[in-house]
Length: 238
Image 1 (cartoon, one colour):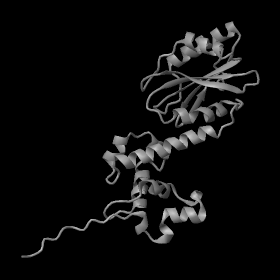
Image 2 (cartoon, rainbow, N blue to C red; image 1 turned 180 degrees about the vertical axis):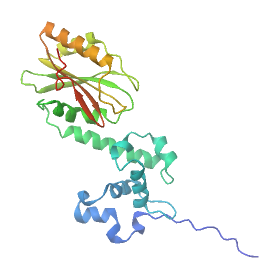
Image 3 (cartoon, rainbow, N blue to C red; image 1 turned 135 degrees about the horizontal axis):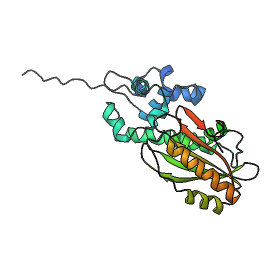
Image 4 (cartoon, rainbow, N blue to C red; image 1 turned 90 degrees about the vertical axis):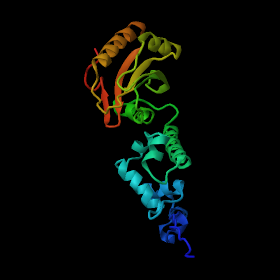
């Protein structure tokens, strides 16, 4: 009887690569900064699929999302497992957990009481909290007299196009934190930074209310992955 032959399954893991191409060995020799994003992801994933090395698999994932880790961070576990053969639930969790750690690390590198010197500094301070979201969130930054940040507080969470904001909650929160000044910040998931009519209305209302109770309304900054919009920079605080 002829013996039945089964197709050979072959997975190109990191250990199957040439020594000079192994991300772990390269990291040991030259440091993690010498690795490409695909190689760093390959360390997390561990092995590729039949006919595709783990580095090639990870480069394909990056290519799919314009080589931007931020775009991958927006995915769900289901998104990753559904789109890429070789990425199961455990590997998807590992990738997204690593990206979340990176986001938190970026936040921790900031000084404990950074000073607001411009709208760009507000954007840099808040972007890692907001640009990866698919929904809108509304935050407030409280300041001391020298415009050092004393707190950042999430005020509300909404849908993809807007979030409800109660000015009374903002003012009460500012008073509770003994704020000398405040900056309000929210994101536009669409990538369009230009303010809506609702954004204009809440800005005008809060600007007027803050002046009554002696709190400086410093700015309203709209954040997206494409940049930001500042009411102060555009001379729209009046």
